Length: 216
Image: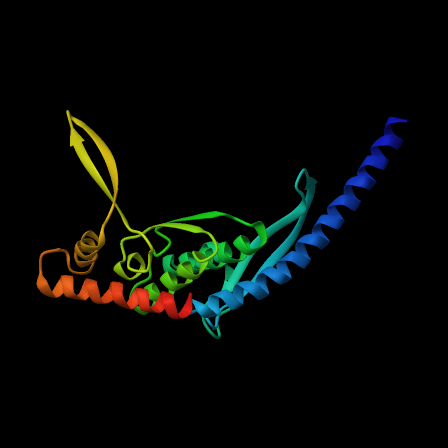
């Protein structure tokens, strides 16, 4: 009787695993399609992305080993994401995945901790614009050291470390308009007291506001 019961449970487990595999493969196809679309907006238009499935012994979470594979450049073979992606590529892939998941899960708040690692220049601007677009329908909190991204925020806060009575602590304060100008100037040039740096910071803030009004 026990052998018969075990056989029946094994059959049910195999059927459940097969159904889960089918659902995963269907979701993977949709994820790949949408992720490639998002990555095209983030300067990775030639990226190929796929999900590799291998079968294992059934466990509580199914009978699949799942691995993300990609080719970020034309003509390169598909390889595991964990093995070949650069810091900048991982940052953009994570941002793309967050953008997709937010649409499906109804996330009210998204937190990006230095999602801009490995990007700069025009690509930093593009990443900032993607987060700015996300921020139109939900709260986005971003920790960044890039002026291009900070300038696109609706509000900007400065996190500072302080030492008091031999103990280190942190403080957070919201910056007013002049505070933002000074901090952006510091991010751009290392100092907030140069006339050229502050003028550049004001220009960045003005350009960001114009962009948000036009596009978001």
